[in-house]
Structures are given as C-alpha cells and as structure tokens.
Image (cartoon, rainbow, N blue to C red; front, side):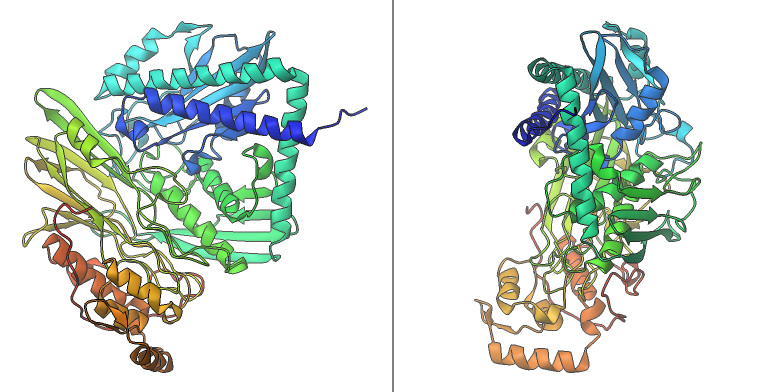
Length: 638
C-alpha cells in the first residue's frame, strides 16, 4: 500500500529545503572575498535529491535556475556509485562537464547518510578572474575558449575529505587575483558544508525513506501546478524574433527566433532559425538557454511553484547544435550572459502574443558586464561588476527604475566600496531623463554609470547591447531608449560599440561613460493618466516638453499643473492624426537629455531611429524630428 503524503508535512519539508538553499547563500555571501559575489550577488545555490534532481534553489540569480540539472546529470553519469564521504567536486568547462562559462565555477558536495548518497549541496560562483586575455575574463573579442581562461573539467576538489592542493595551486597560478578567487572558492566550500549539515538534520528528523517520498511528492506537485498554468493558456503557436545588435564597429544583427507552441498542458519551445555560433565570446552553452526558457514560464505562472525539476517536465525545448545558443567546441562563451538575456526576452515576447495582458515590456536588455584591470602600486588589480538597470512597463503599473533585470536578481555594487578597493572613482551614477519607453505604463529609466580611472594604465572590457534593437514595447507601448558607451565624454569623445571586438587601454584620468538602455512601455502613451505624467515631470524623470510631445499632456507653471482642457484638445489632435511622433519621437528628447547630462554630443547615427524589432502590439513607427530642453543632472548625482 502506498504511503500517504501529509500536506502539512509536505509544506514543512518544502520550506525546510528552501531554507537550506538560502542558508547556503547567506554563508557564501558573508564569507566571500570579492565584490562581484558579496555585493553584486552573482552566484547561486541549490539542493538536490539522491538522484541529483534539484529540489530547492536560493533566491539569487534566476538565469542559473535551469543549469543545475545538466551539471548534476553529468556528475552522476561520471561518478555515480564511486563517490565517498568527504568528496567535493569542482568544474567550469562548458564542453563535456556541464558548465556554462569559465568564470562560473561549480562546487558540489554529495551528502552521505548511513553510507548512502541521499542528496547534494551545490553552488556556483562567478569568479572575479579565471585568467585569459583580459582582466576579469569577459573578453567579447575572444574567438575560442582557449583564450578565455583556465578550463576545469570535472575534478575532485576534496577526495574523501582531503583537499586537492595541486588543483588549488594550479588555479591560483592561472588567475590575476588569486587571493580573491581562492577566497571565494573557500566560501563555496563553507556554503556546501552548511548545506550538508542542514540536509542531514532533515534526514535525521524524517528518515531517508520518508524524505525521499516527500521529495517525489514535491516534484509531482510542481509538475501538476505547471501543467495547470499551461492549460490556462490559449492553445496555439506563438513566434517571436529578437536580436543582439552585433559585434564590433560594423555590427551585423544576431537573430533569435523562437517558436512556442501551447498544446493542452504542455509547451514546446523550438529555437530553430537562431543564428549560428560566432567567433566571439557571446555564444551561450545549451543549459543556459534551457534555463532562460524555463524562467520565462516561471515568471508567467501566477502561483507559487516549488523550485524542483518537476515543473520543467511539461516544457520541451529544442536548441540547435552549432548555434549561438548551443555552440560546439572551440566556441568562446565567457560573455554569454547577454545571449541568455536576449533568449529570455524572446520567449517573453512570444508569450505576450498568447496573453498580452500578463506580460511586461522588455527591460534594459540584460546586465552590463564591465571590467578593468592591470598593475597599480606594484600589484595586480581587477575591478569587475555587473550593472543592473530597469523593468519594462507592466500590464497594470510602470516598469521599475533602478532594478535588477527579471532574469538576474542581482545588485549594483556600492560606489563607496568600489572606490575603497580599486583605483577607480565613480563620478556619475543616476537616471537619464526622458529615457523610459512611453506607454500607458512607461518603461523604467536608463541608468548612467561613469568611471574615472586612477591607475597609470589598465585594460578595459565590457559587454552591453540594445543600441539598434531597442527594448520592445507591448500592447501599443513604445520601445525604450538605446545603450551608449563613451570613452572620455566631451567634445572629443569616442563612441564605442556595444560589443567591442577589442580591449581598450586606458590611462590615469581617462573616463568611461556607460548608459544602459531604457525599458519599453506598455499600452498606448495617450492613455497614460495625466497625473502620472505630472509626477514624472516633478521627479525629473521627464521634461515638460517630452510630456507634451509624447504623452499629449500640457503642464503649466513651476508646479507643473496639468491643464486639463489643453491636454484633452492636444490628445484629441494626436489621436486624430495618430502622429508618428509618439512612435520613436521620444529618442531626440533622450539624446538631448543625455548630451546635456554628460556634456558630450551624441551623434544622430549613434541611436536607433528605424524600427529593428517590433514588439507585440507595436505599430509601424517612423521618426519625426522633435526638439526639447532637458534638465541635466549634476555630475556625480545619484
């Protein structure tokens, strides 16, 4: 007779497993050496059952969500039945070991109870540096993985409790800042040790047989809830195409084509038609794209679904081999993050066609990776960070300004800590006025981050996107504003590509200004509540000229009072003409606001004026010149 599952005990065990994953995350954060872990939170933790299936994940990087199953399957295929108490495994190689890119190092500890493996404590951390041709190891211009840093196949970091000193020495000798890398690796060891301790507490409380039974129930529950969510969607085929702008000074668009079929309680996602792999570091290994695909469905679900592999069962994914989303050796992959973000945007765009009232517009396009390093005061330094931006307009409210991308759940590093630990000053950090995509609910504002270099020399790299292919709007909302990268803002500035195929030598007192894209809008801008337009103007998020030209709202006086009569007349006139000014006409306002803010002219050709991606519900915009005064923020404002 099959043993019953008590729903209260099931909930207690579910929360207990979630608590273990979060405890691991807190231990890692508190013991990490590097800011990219401690402050940016670019890491993940997970608990897996005796079969290696994920049963809980810490509240961290969402795009890592679906990667653990691939890593665990690889580990069990290689070492299943040959593990011993005290073993700890480590790897990062995407080709043959289940890794995602070289900076993300997995550490996995089998949990033994009464002589048997009953679970696994796992974590992965984005390390500050793993060697390669540039400090920070995120070189878009790498053409093969052998240029990107040290590849670690599936190896034992600890063998029956004994540390592998040879492996640690090899790693330390191949990275620029070994104290940070080895320190973060020790933090990972502390994390999985805490996971083991807490999981053993559950095993002692419930016993292996009962815990395994409840874990199976959790998998089944997650699958059932996801099937119910899929059943509530209208059956049909929904396709979407998005792009990465391309590489270098003369970029060619890189295509992301997704076909989502909803059929009953199942979803079939096919990426056929996506561009082939490229000779640059933005290729994304397949597990990362599975993760991005699963995540979009998790975001769509309106109910709490346990973080177990069970919810993945109703979702089938096809990722073509040799494509930019499933490359073959020796394709470089360290800058693959932007590809995962774009895959997520594409799936969300497809789902917006199925349920347009439940999907937000596109965010800023993904986190920016920035790094600079060299020798300062006789020592190697590496400053690396991920910069987060904003959310697209949502079905019932504005996008969020200054927030992590939906797919990331990370954080911007505090300026004070950056300046305390690196020969870098952050001279500007704030929002760009007139940068959020217009809509009934506008997109979040673009962020500007400007660095002043203090070291005599350094090598700078970065990974950005969304200059030509702007974040899409939905339900008639307009696209967002473009990403801009400027070396030495001023009359003689140099405009840099979004994905440069080179590193840049920078000297003391040079500066780099990065502007993230503003997010897309949701709904017709001419239906936005005038009071919300007024609030944005009072907060300095938009100018009065922008409010009039884009939203049809007339603001008067220093108090920016809404002139209801003039607003009604102007909106009627705009609706009657369906003026194409509001399609992409907000971009000249953005350009002027940015130029005044950083005292650097932004050439017309540097921003998208022709539609490259049409989001769900978008019109057929053509630009029309517009002028506006824009309030510039003071240097260093936050």
